[in-house]
Length: 117
Length: 112
Image (cartoon, rainbow over all chains, first blue to last red):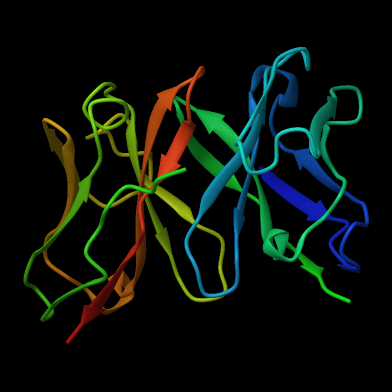
């Protein structure tokens, strides 16, 4: 089955760190750019980061630049999002998505990150 | 990071059509033919409905269609069905040196 499965979401204090993982299966992972998109509670979608197929080209939204790092392990079919210096406004459901023609054709179920003291 | 502008809500009776607009700028919607649309049911992940302005992925009913004129893209759902009731988001590529991707504010479609 073609799918993405995120994990790693948790409750974390402001200033803390968290690493999200997204395991891919059912397709050739190394052929696709991968992205992270988040959705704060009751709000809309926001693109936050993408990574090229080799893992050498990274892009970030201004709101997370310098705090978040995207990476991938093509041998493990997994993409990661390392989140540091977390803020209350980072509270959201985080989705891993597969890039397709400058859109996103496959989504995981999401993992919830809550930043609160 | 400015979001694309969508109407908060839209509605129609079963069998009718509803059109949702998505307004951006020449730096995003108007500058690229890379507008996509997503359907999201409550508590679920988004689903790609339209890509490259007007193309439908395999499995998406042809009741869903997309178009673009200038800085505004549109999604039309024809022959509304109960299962079409959901939130819809547009998204545009905005260039790798700028915003990369920008989503719309979202539209809640209600089937009356």
